[in-house]
Structures are given as C-alpha cells and as structure tokens.
Image 1 (cartoon, rainbow, N blue to C red):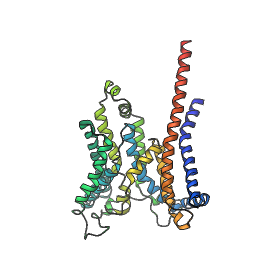
Image 2: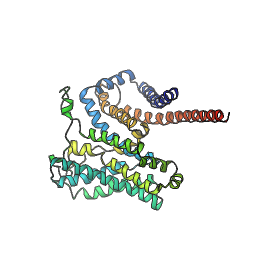
Image 3: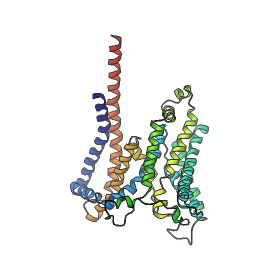
Image 4: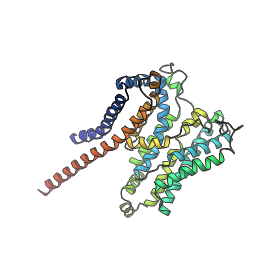
Length: 368
C-alpha cells in the first residue's frame, strides 16, 4: 500500500509542481510589466467560473482533447504526429463538402459526416506512416510536408470549386442541412439552470468522452494496445515476439489521424455547419502540448485540455478590466509545458532510482 501511495504521490507531484512553477513565473512576469498578479488571476478565476464561460470552456476543451488524444496515440508508439493540424483541416473540408452535397435522415447524415472525417484524417496520417516504413521518411518531416500539401495545396486548390455563392472573405462550402447538425446538450444543462445566456454546449463533448474511453481500452487494456506499445519501445523485441513493427507504425498513424479527423467537428457540425474562414486554427499544434502535459493518459489529457481551455476562455476579461494583457495566457501555457517536461523527467528519474533500489534489495533477499 505504501508503495502504491508513493507512486501516486510521484505521479501527482510533476503536474502540480509544473502548475505551481508556471503561476509563480507568470506572476513574476506580471509584476515586471507593472500588473498585479493577484488581481489578474482573480479576474480570470471569477470570470471563468460563470456558467456561460464554463460552457465556452467545455466547447473549447472538446477539440483540444480530441487533438491531444490524436497526438497521444502516436506518442504511445514513439511516433511524433505533428500533422494533426493538416489532418483535421483536410478532414473538415472533405466532410463539409460531402455533408453539404447530401441530405440523409438525421442520424445517418451526421454519422456519415463524422465517419468521412475519420476516414480522411486516418488516410492522410497513414500516408505519413507508409512513407516512414517504405521510404524511411521520418514521421515529423512527413507530417509537416503533408500539412502544407493539405492546407496550402489540396484545400486551397479545391475551395473555389466547392464554394457556395459569390466569393467573399468568409464565404465557404455549401451549408450542411440541419439533419447533419450535432444536437446540443442544453437540455441537460437547463435541467439545473436556464441562465446560460444563449450559449450552446456542443454534443461533440459526448463523442470526445467516447473517444477517450475507446483510447484507454484499446491502448491500455487490449492485446493490440500491448503490441503497439511494445513495438514503440523495442521494435526488434516486438518482431521476435511475432509483432510486425512496420505494420504497427502504419496502424498507429491511421488511428491517430482518425482521431484527428474529429477535431474540427465542433466547428463543423455544432457551430458553422460549413467549411469557411471562421473555424479555429492551431488546434493540432495545441493538442501536442495537451498530450505532453497529460502524459498521454486519457484522464491527464482531459485535465490538460480543460486547463488550456480555461485559460483561453477566461483571458478575454483581462483586456476588459485592464488588469493585465491577455497575452499573459500564452506565456502561462508555454511555461506550464516547459516546466511539465522538466518536472516529469525529474520525477521519472526518481522513480527509476527507487525501482532499481527495490530490485537490488529483492535480489539480495533472494540470494540470502
């Protein structure tokens, strides 16, 4: 029991230490620029605790979580999928075109859009996996190249062909019929209160929860997940055990891309219902930070996504009150990630030393 409690304490020490250091360093920055950190953090906490802002936070956390899970799948295989950005944007574009061109009964229409997004994201990410195992192209280089091809090539070339109406700054693809819209969760929220000031809690939150459960069961509770993790840790040993590491690389990249394909669905099926210039960019790169901070664990990724979403949603009040610059949030997010990497590595070294010591004591006891 003592060993379990100590392991749990070590697991919690890293994220708590990183958060504490991040807030201390951010407070120092605020003092240096002439702001009161207590007032600034107090404004963020008060504003971020309002129900309508909590809904905004959950809507923001949902794509961040999906992006974090997409990156985490690659990390569990020792793959760095930096192409989530291009994968979800291409998936969102194709899903918007398909969804806007068809009219199916409600659930089928929505399901088709989600499945198309997952297939496109999976295929585009799988292409990077194929390049790695057949041509030796590092997945970082491959996914970066595919990002540019997807966003600056395919989407840029085809957006004009599928644009709906006259060309304007915000014009996009054809509007998806209402049968393809994701139902909101306001009915659940309004069972407790109706004071949500017109906000809508996206039903994609449920999809994100299901993805997290599927990720945990597949990666941590299945033979396939064990083979995938073993292939990432030691491809030679995995091959000796009958696991083809090259195939596992492609499968891991496909699964990562499939999760990435769902990242843009909050904007597509819950908000704008078309692909245009209003969608949220940068979610793919933010997901990498979320996955690293959450240590690739579905619960840890959820907390990291909520933390980043809270800071994004509550930072707007700083400009209103004038207590600090909203850019302090970007500094905080960067510092949190940096300190998390450092503290996690430090805690991991402590854990390894303790495990080595325990193994030595057990060996000595057995020899005696």
